[in-house]
Structures are given as structure tokens and as C-alpha cells.
Length: 118
Length: 114
Image (cartoon, rainbow over all chains, first blue to last red; front, side, top):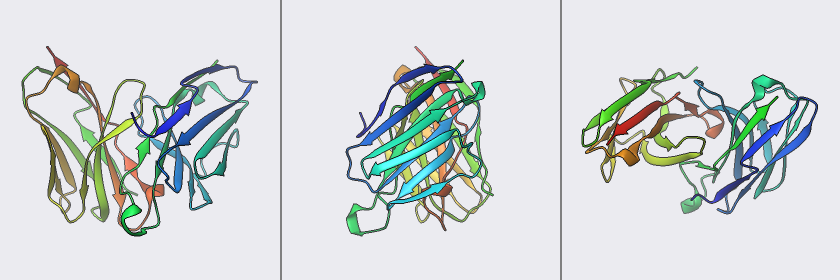
């Protein structure tokens, strides 16, 4: 099992609900990511928090709002979602910055949250 | 814009067979290429990572090769087992950027029949 955990694993919500996805990494990494994985599509990067800086994909709707209170925790706040937002949401972490042997050349993924919007 | 294509989209083989999964990319200016495994409804597990200066990497029954000039990588699985059944994803990290610009393929769904 990886050092990245996600909760909840499954979520069903109506279009008017507000919910949050949580991700926690226990690897001491300095970058965290949210990805969306839809059927028959490649992983889509939604947000990145790297070295305390937020980088976002401009095509992500404002109904998705990320929060990164510290380097170990990442949230994705959801409100007024649409049925087409139903997907697997994956969190990942990595060590960026190239500082000696602590740099990783790979991302470590969590198990994902399966989101269904009714 | 980098594009990553994986062929075939799905593959079904009998147990014990050797098989090859293909990944092609359009921009050869890459930093590394990585193969992941994904089980249904779960996250990605890294299998092999090949740096741009390398030609291949091996781990157990898995061997990944990289031909950067032609924009191709292959994942070779020897003596396939039912436990190898999963979706295999290829991901390319560009030479000029961080993980913000990693491009994934859609994957090849492999089924190994006992």
C-alpha cells in the first residue's frame, strides 16, 4: 500500500450538496496533486501544490476548490457539481525541487475517491 | 502539445504467454517515461521508470524499453499470470517542466486468462 491515503473511498452526492475529498501523504513530500480520471480518457491534472505554490489547470470549473493547509494534507471542496463530474479522483505526491537525494522522479498515488453525482 | 497513445486499448491472453504493450509519444523532448499499473477502481502503482538517457529498465518479469528518437516505449511482460490483469498506463514527463505537464495515455486493459 502507498503512503498516500484518500477519504472517502466512495461518495455519492446530489447536485446541490457540498462535500470535501481529503488526501494525506506520509512520505514527507513537498508537492501534492489532484487528478480526475474519467472513463476512456487520460488522467487530467486539476491542481498542483508545489513548494507551497498553487498551480491550476485553467479548464477546471470553479465548482472545484482545492485547499492545502500544509505539505501533508490536501482537500478538494465540491459544490453544485454536475453529473459529468462523476469520476475517480486521484491524489498524488512527489518530492520536487531537486535537493540532493530527496528528489523523487515519480509520483505516488492514493487509491482514489469514486465520485458519483446524481 | 504532447500526446501519448497506447496500443492496443485492450488485450486478452492465456496464462503463460509473453506479451508486449506499446506506448508512443509525439514530442521526443522528454525527461522520463513511466509505466504504471492500475487495478479496477484503484490508484496507480509505479512499475518502471526510464530516464531519457536510458534505453531500458527491468524489474522481475517486466522489461520496459525506450526509443526516444522514434517516440516509442514498450512494456514486455514475460510468462503472464492472472494476477497481471490490470490496466497499464504510460506517462511522459517533459524535459522542460515538472509534474504539471506530465501526459498520460489512456491505458491498455490486460486480461490474463487462467
